[in-house]
Image (cartoon, rainbow, N blue to C red):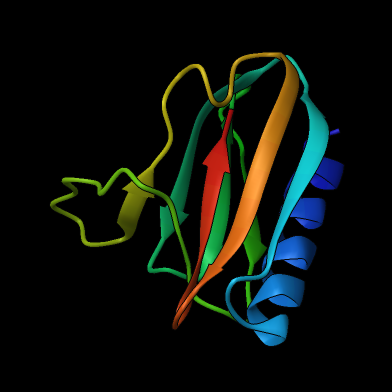
Length: 107
């Protein structure tokens, strides 16, 4: 389920980016149980941290962001999501072309 969630977000991000601003789409996706964190690394990877200690990363060919800038000393994590964003259940994921990047928001 996390594979489908991540793949659909990255596919949508690449699509709206190449369509250009103000392109935007909303995805209705179900977040499965077992996700304990979600981040964007170096504007290129959507990373899910799972309860079993594993990580799943989805690489984007376009720059992706959220509206929460991370304070990460390692320099890998550029953007964070809130716990509500990756809690189990139905999520409305808004993917919007924003100049040279794509903004990803979860509602």
